[in-house]
Length: 157
Image 1 (cartoon, rainbow, N blue to C red):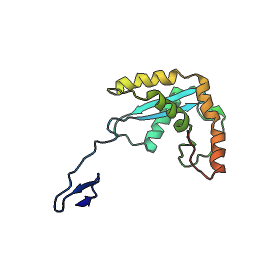
Image 2: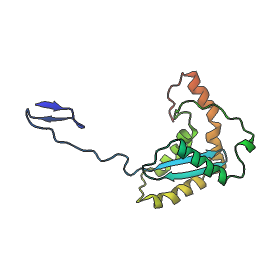
Image 3: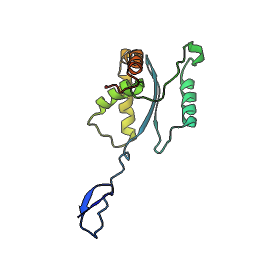
Image 4: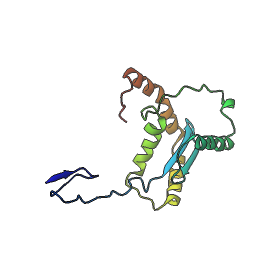
């Protein structure tokens, strides 16, 4: 017997070819959600079209759409813009708070297509009280300090 190192390990007799076991595309039924939010709630939310790649053009387009939907621009808000560290899910409020809660809420649910998912997402995000969003933002300084104190170690949710 010889061990084949294809996608899946399997034993085959000498001289025989291993059976190819093609895995279905693991992301074939997933959609990408791009969401912008603050301590008061959702600012902008978009389910991206299939095969969309997030790049500068997509971000610029989203920022333009977001600003067009808002009464105030970032400049008018008089806020301090903090430098953002490299992506770390423990420091991204969207990852550790918003999407973690959404993931819990979606557990075990299946949707036939995007048209069924979109109203569900709207109901979830609109159904959260302002304190839900504020709590996620308020956790940022504590999380940042935790990561700095531990030299960027992982934070459990």
